[in-house]
Figure 1 (cartoon, rainbow, N blue to C red):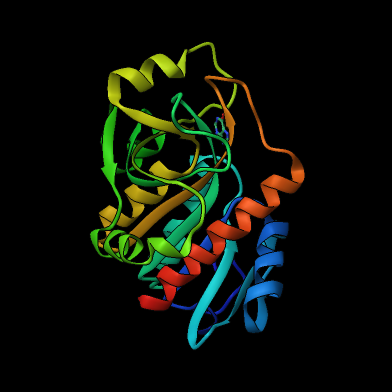
Figure 2: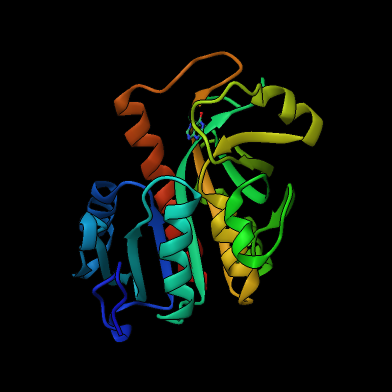
Length: 235
Ligand code: HPA
């Protein structure tokens, strides 16, 4: 059954979904890594492909920007399409001096103040955890990635531009970086007992103000996608 935001039929979506914010990045992942990739939805240009990575059936789908957008797509994947596992690959801003651009962060959990949690009648700041099973598999295949990996907590914010000093919050709560989609994903997974994981490449630093060139961004992104696909192969 299709939803207002996804034209795919239930059988067209695999039980494992790899998500990225940018639809064109999703298209690139499908073309570069999947065999027999079929475009199953493109509502609002949220490209969604299903195919095979080695012998594992997988769907690759865009999630747009921010927790509300991630909230819609991941909710429908878990509830309407009965997806079991979602891995998000994205970019993140570093909040720590020892976390450099090009490094990878695996979000064991995220701290959030998002309003998205109100749909579950949970109010106020909270920490949300990644799925244990998918996190363990990530630890198992971590040597497939060349970049330094940081395992820990991230900040999942609702705002890119803000007057708040996120580096101060990072010290208080022991947070590695800031992104904008992990909370809705972990909330939705937690509420229906499904698996979710967020893996991010550090694209910029709020501490040193360094950022990645377009070519570096692309290369470190590929490294992370290959890591995510190795996890998916084990699922
Ligand atoms: N803030 C929020 N989200 C981000 C950032 C940032 O600095 N960098 C990449 N995603």
